[in-house]
Length: 344
Image (cartoon, rainbow, N blue to C red; front, side, top):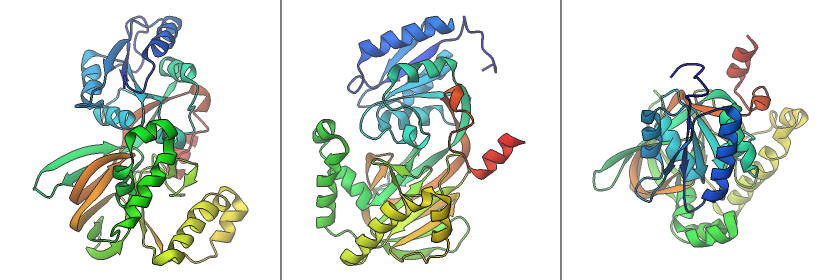
């Protein structure tokens, strides 16, 4: 598409989850914003159970959309990102639902729908990384998907698979409490072989492995403090608690050290002189492969993806274009390399 499309000919597409979105309210905001911007009539693409947004996003691009708004929860945003990946048409986030994880990591508005819609027509574009996973099932089946925030295997994924979706609608992220309690009751140690980039394969025993493009979770929990959305690298953490003490160490590390101390320069200096705990192991890489001894639950951006026996995850650097408020162009999180490029 041209760098500067003719506003009178340009149109926006809205890929929306009709279950989570107040369509009438959203249409009112979109119609007002498109008139103010002088754009043509927006086109609407509802998601379905069969297709949560991938096909709709691709169809919108094929139809000629200049921007695609993703209106729904994390699943809708993930699916639309998958449909737009490796292209030039930007995604504009209209967050709704429990997590809103990508918007949280980019420090975008979570509760001002009108402002988010206006950004789709008036904002600026920024490229971020896209994660892609190839999954192998127990029956030999294979499928591929994209993610923008985090992929997980083990207790994390079992928690999501065990969470009641109706309860989640009513109480939000608190519904995960029951899911994680159920996951912890069963056998939760995962034996797997993994290979990171070109390193030799290794065998490990873990409870959870998380592959992050972003580091912030619901509840303002900073799990991966060094993760950046545009550095072309995954931040990976393996949780290996041994008994109650191990879980206490993990909670201290994530909630206090990552969540409080790392947010200040003095805190980071103090932490640089402390030893890492064995219960958490942090890694970085562009590609990681896991193969499990037994089928394990897997999740992408908070969506349960079923059981897998092998996973290959790789980064596509700057493969997704995201539209952000023009006023935030210089203040949103970025990797050190991206900051240096902006300064140059």
